[in-house]
Amino acid sequence: MTNFTTPHTPANITLTSFWQIGIFETFMLTFNFISGLPTNAYVVWLIMTGTGNGVASDFFNLNLSICGIFVSVNALLILVSKWFPFQSLTAITQFFFGLTVTGHPLFQSLMCVERYLAVVHPVTFLKYKPLRYRVICCTVAWIYIFGTCLLCMFSFLSFTIYMYIWFYSLQFLLFLFIQLLCLMAVIRALKQSGPGERGREKEEENLMKRRAFYIIRVTTFSLVVTYVPFIATGLHSLATQQFIQILWSISYICFMLAGFVHLGLYLHRTGKLFCFCSKHSF
Image 1 (cartoon, rainbow, N blue to C red):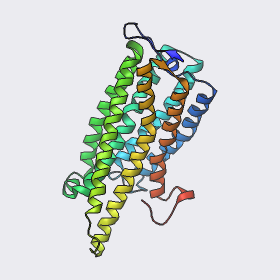
Image 2: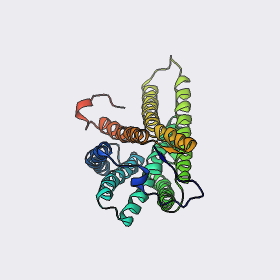
Image 3: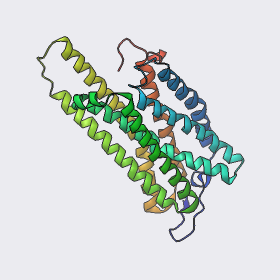
Image 4: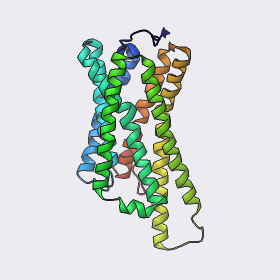
């Protein structure tokens, strides 16, 4: 266990010193790059070519996969920085780390909010369904992500690690709270449907609600598995002022594996996930 720097001590903490890269971590980063990059690129290609529901319907999923591409590339950069510890390369890896702590949960939350509006407020959903509204929303999101990328880079290079841990812990809790609210609202809307109601339109409406519920539930579960271990490990490190390597390694395993959930969900819905492909998709 390695002690953190105190707030009164100038910290020049790099990513490799924050998370020491051993053999096991090298394997995880390699797997993330080899598996994550082509899979996310394939999903982007499917969305752009209109294989799924079209670019408009899957626009948030498209941006989420673009974030996944940068995260996979950053895994390669971290490995390279292990052998060539240049300061400029380390700064780049820390900059892209902002996509991990902001981009991924932000676009997941936007997807959940979109499904929430489709079920609970369908009139509002139809009003803002055109692609231009999604483009505006994602533009604002990317500006915010870019700002957090700069914050992550400067917090590693100029400030103590405490600032970074508090930032991403509070941010993860906020995104998790938003998704849980959407999940609870959709569940309540589903329970309000009358059991004796019939008709083709009602069946289609219930199918849409169930799809939205499944997507929100899977996305929320993915967020919990991805970021709760990081939150718990970070708060433990703040409380004890000690760095336990195995906890950060376990947290990264959860993040890496849960990052493939939205990819599998999309590939399953489009019928491209051959081993789990079925006639009825989410």
